[in-house]
Figure 1 (tube, helix red, strand yellow):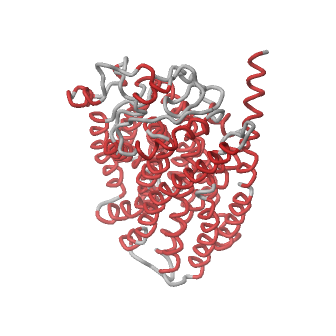
Figure 2: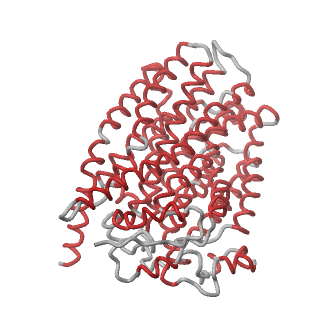
Figure 3: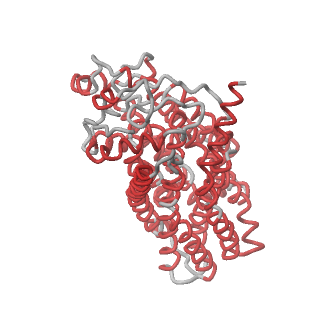
Length: 534
């Protein structure tokens, strides 16, 4: 019989988590991959090494609720530049084409290579964050982005621009996935959706507002101003993160009460007496330390993607994101052509609906994710209490996927309307509203997918988050590379309808991971356990 465990977490959300604590421990049992069997102090059950008295005294994180939101701000300031790097260049493509005398297909490579490396680089660098810590990888990525942006702004060769765009993307793109790992370090499952949604939404504001920023700078100055803006903005954010971003990896600092042993993980903010007292650095909670350090595996993300429940969940989400990327690209091109013929600054303003709706989608879906999780958790608890025999493990796949399922289908209708309205030159309100609704849905899917991956792979949170990054960015690069040919043969409306049909089929296939995903996962873990015994 399970006993109710009380918590004295200093966060104001602690009271909310207390009734779910017993449930969360049982729900997590058996969900993590075989490489990450060590539990988070207050999220596991049946672990003899952590007594109920220890759990009641040790908070999951030394961060206060308000400080968690400060962490959201820091993470957003770092990840924002990754999402900004692609759309901010869209309005400047024609300027690049004229200055360097290259074809339209060739100038599009400046965007395609950025998206391609944005998908590939995190699968490698996120593993470094899971092994050596979040802080050094985030800071190094920002530094690479700053230096490469300076190089692009000063470049007089298109080949050099392309090469530096690859380096620029490789440096900054892993930060989005690592940010999800940081959030997983300091949040409980019952509040994780809210914070993941906030970080994801605020970070991807760069994707939504990037074209507005790029159009304004290009119209006022030239295309080089876009990269000088990236240099200065990311430089300021780098300084803020260097001073105030603490290491959060639980294998290194536990619940933040342990002082990092390596200087690369040490933050200057820990020198402040008030922070040292709050984090209890003089009396660290050693039992909060997760001693199962994930070994460096550069193909770990690909192994996770190969799991059928992960692939079936992420594929429609990746297709949805790639279609959103195409909508942002085609909107810029269409509004500068007949029948609209808008100036560049007006085109930039037309991205405001996407930005606002994307922000709303992330925050509202984050709350919705937590509400659905508590609903399924309560239902699981009631069924377990009424069951005389052993109950099935908590179906976290169903609890997370269902939160974004309606939005997945709504996005299909929104993007079909968007495609045909752009092709037909309908009133500007139609494509803008459709774009806003589609963006809302895409941000919802992003939040649910990121939260699910962290739940399933807590010790490889950054690597797991890079899986969605890999799929969405790779598909975006692929479709963007062939978008011109698809438009020529299928028209814009036909292209969007075709891609929406793929998303619709993928959405319908989500029933399989929701219903059978935990069974597949359990069988795989059993086979791995048997193989290790043999």
